[in-house]
Figure 1: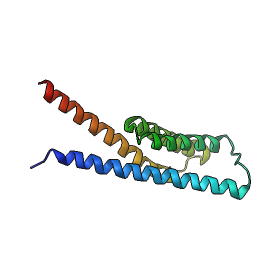
Figure 2: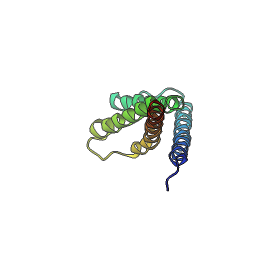
Figure 3: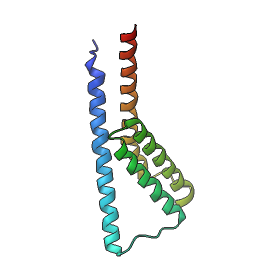
Figure 4: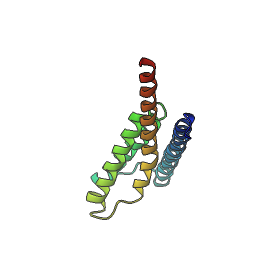
Length: 132
């Protein structure tokens, strides 16, 4: 028998996994960037393809932070940015190679979208039961 709290527990678990993974990605990425700048003594000056990938990755990181408050918007922003980043990497930067490790960053983005979707769906069901 399925309880009504089961989906809520699953959404809560997914939400915290997404938050933890997203925060870890942001913290590690920023620490690697800062270490790289300190090591080189200046800001990196990438070519256009690498610059575009870097820009899209920064947008994905911002999306992870936004998702703490607005799961749907932040998750979708991160997911689209990561997919575009992987596409630019495959087509432009690495010229036809398979997508690399950037695809793993989709996990917290998809979890944020899942949490937003389930919460939204649950609120609609509650509202319909109160109306009817």
